Length: 363
Image (tube, rainbow, N blue to C red; front, side, top):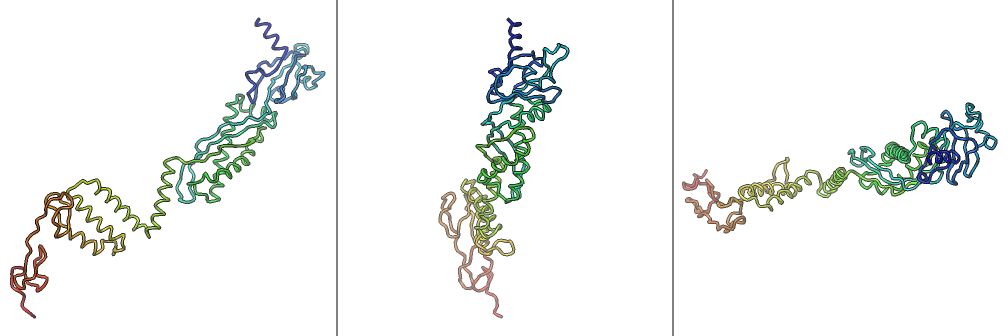
């Protein structure tokens, strides 16, 4: 049975059914019996090679391999067999379009024209492949690079697409000053740019990228977040009137969040004091980069609760931090003029006398 099968295969040459979907199929035998029947499907061509050169091409149809019918076979006759055999490599090359071939991956780090930051750009999509010159495909790609399977050929094509995008298309992005954040809006334009540019890279190999689809450009998630934060900061800085005011506002927000968590104690008193100063900065009370007079006075007027340390205004009856009743100190009066003195004051604000002493002599 095995011998009969081999003999039958030598009588008929055709692409096997399981290889119908291959771009290129190479017939396994290089010794071909004269008068063998060759069948070429309507969507393919058969090429005969010897010593790396295409000797002849057979179009679709069924033909008997006889040098009287196909003159180029005369150059393939094996003289050692008395002219009964041909020595050649036979390739079947499909000429129909192969659609929905995926491509994609990391392009490179690209400098964003808007921010001058380097970000990672990725591209994904599909393309369709069509052989336009079977002879160039066999000689320049299949033969020279030893690529035969669909995976090998399409992997090579995918690299050509990415290579084109890395070079010409990225340069196109830079030349047009397209911000990377929102680059997807230009997907159609870059798809056409890639389609046009990649043809020059693959045409010498007898193939064509017929069309592209589902063309998607995306950013590395971390880089996308960085660009979004950058754009947010720029917008808020403009609204705040300057970077210093925006920075003070961000600090105030952080202080508010920290106070809301309620870590208690003197820390909250410090936060309140800092917040007063920053609030004064945002309001325009900054002088020489320091805390404004109004903010300093407000911070100094706070009195720490003896129980929890939270600051409260003078005269408050209950602590805003723990609710404890606050015992106000008895007011101090000047012994010279009787005016009420501020707590902790050493001299009377009304007559200038030392508290508890005599009024100073008039000058």
